[in-house]
Length: 224
Image (cartoon, rainbow, N blue to C red; front, side, top):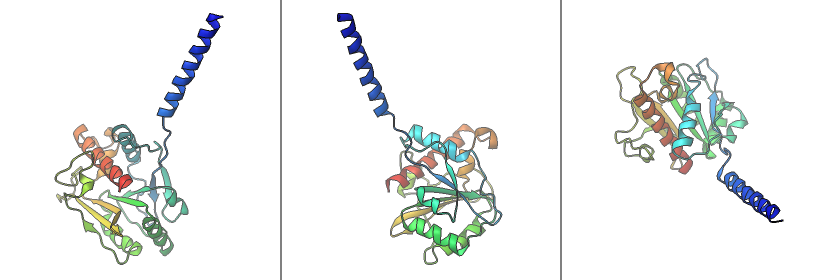
């Protein structure tokens, strides 16, 4: 009788422990997406970058992002399912009026766009973003902006990950109603730094710098 009672107590304690573990485990509740666009540019560049950034952020800044990102057309209504979308590439991008309107509504509604120039995107993306916000301009963020001072401190602003034209890295932003709606990282190549190490052969310190800046962006976006 006593043996059965002890067994019952052990089972109850085991169930309590399982319940505690299950409560502590939070399934991923956020998904982010890569934007697919027209015009011929390689929107699919850096295929390992977002996955590595998500892993780093979940492990180091307590985000709860699904480890598998989605790919979404820039003109699709599905874009509204993701609080954070990422756009990259080297070449041309062309937005139709409908796509520009869709992206505008997404950003005005609270969505966030991170554009990462993978070298060569600048001359194409600027006129296309004017289609999205004809009355708004990119403004350069100073190194004092909070996005550079989240968990990780970047006192000099955006870090330089890859050299191309010997130009300094710059972070440009579009603000909608005082909210940072779009961040454009230029002459930096953050996405390259997020990639698997064997892709670009970057040092671990360079990759870590890129991942930390990426984590800062996510932390700022999810808390602004």
